Every structure is written in C-alpha cells, then in structure tokens.
Amino acid sequence: MNERWNWDSAWPAPAKLNLFLHVVGRRADGYHLLQTVFRFVGHGDSLRFSPRADGRVTLARPLPGVPPESDLTVRAARLLRDETGCREGVEIDVEKRLPPGGGLGGGSSDAATVLLALNHLWRTGVPRRRLQEMGLALGADVPVFVAGENAFAEGVGEALRPVALPPAWYVVLEPPAQTPTALIFGDPRLKRDTPPIAARDWRPGFGGNDLQPAAVRRFPEIARHLDWLARFGEARMTGSGACVFAEFAGEAAAREVLGGLPGDMRGWVAAGLDRHPLRALDDEAERVLEKSGKH
Image (cartoon, helix red, strand yellow):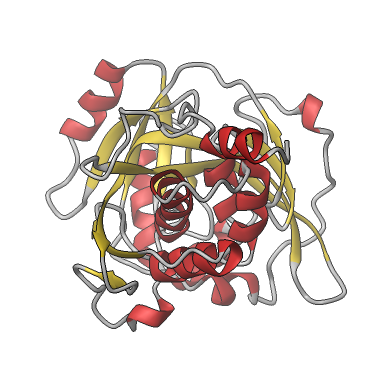
C-alpha cells in the first residue's frame, strides 16, 4: 500500500476550471452535448476518513440543508460498497473550501476523492476505469476527477482525452450567488449549436463559455465580478457559474490583481496543476487483480 496515503491522511479534492465550455447539441433525452477543457487547480476541499466498526457510512459534519443520504460523498461510499460487496464502515469529514453552486466541481471532486480514497483504504481493487464509470452515475463531472488528468471532454462531459496544459496561475472570484445548473441549461436563449471542434485543434485561449450569457442575465453579481476581473485579463465563468476566473502567466501578477480586490468581493489565487494530486496513487486495483489471478 502506498504509505503516503493512509487513514491519517488529509485527502485532496481540488477545484476544476472550464477553460472553455461550448454547447454543441442536445441528445434525444434532453441532455446537452458539450465540449470543454477541464483544468485542476491547487485549491479545493480536503477529506479525512475514519474506519467504523459498525459498517455504517456517516458524515462528521453534514452540510446544512443536505440530507446525509443525498450527500454525494455518502452516495459515493455506498456505491463503492455495493459494487464490491465490502462491509466496512467509514466516517467522512469534509473540510469545505469550495462554494456550492460555484461551477468549480466541489461536490463532484469530493465524490471522486471518496471513490479513490476508499478504494485504496478498503483495498477493494476496483480499476480506475470502472471507478470513472461509477462516478458518472453520481454526476457528469465526477469521471474527470477520478481519471486525474486535465482533459478535453465531450458528450455530457464523460468522454475524456488527456491534454497537456502550459503553466498558469488563476485569480478566481466567488460571486455571492448559487446558479442552479438546470436553470442555466433551461434558459430558452441558451446557445445550443456552437460548431464542435476536434480535440487536437484546441489551443489555450480558444472559445468562451456558452452558459455565461444565461447566468449573467439572471445573476447581476456574476456580471459585476466579470466586469471587475476583465480589467486585468480575459475573464470567464467556469461551468454553469457562479465563479469567474482570469489566467495569468505568474503568481506575482495574479496576487497583485487579487490584492486590489474590492472589500465586498471574495476570491483567491491558485496555480494550475499538471494532474490531480491523487493521480500518482499506487494502482492498488492492479495489484489486487494480479494477486487474484484475474489480471
């Protein structure tokens, strides 16, 4: 077992940014077809796990207004147990740093970290590819966090191709708004016919966010934060909002911008990551399969 990651560890659940997000069509079942590039950044939630002898899955700090059975971390742990027949129990403690409804993938990232961490700690041996498939049942953004690499994504966000991204720093602002994803995608004026591109043709700086106009129309605070950040670089919304970001070549430039943030705005600076911090986790699944003779 990789000794770096154990029951005493704080397991990272990083935020993601959508460097662009285009709606290129719609499936017969109503789901929108997307193209986007996901980038992980060095800021996010943190999870700790404690084994339970009674076989229950519990939360140390339930989220206000969210029933534990609906919490994505609890659902992820139970899904892994159902998949593997594992009878272990666990208490999950999430230190939240990412705002709900922010477009940063906080809940999806937490769920992915649960799958990765408990698969390792419980030694259940589920291959990463299967964990990605399981994650899709929890949410469209979960698979990219499980895969652990910055990616060009298509479909509803689950068809992933790893992409190499240059070093960058980001200023991310958190407008005081929660944008329900269904509300934004349901906007009658949402652009749903942006021409798709081939993954190989994408370059940093390309495109925009087709969901941004709908969010700005409904949430003036998003527009205000975009306008302020656009004074220093190209500002975009991530996901279906509400958070907005701008990219900078270095840390000093990003921190200088953040230093001038108005007192009634909230934000932070983070480096773009080459990969998810847990991507380097020893592939315990492969070792279990080899020992079982099923590899």
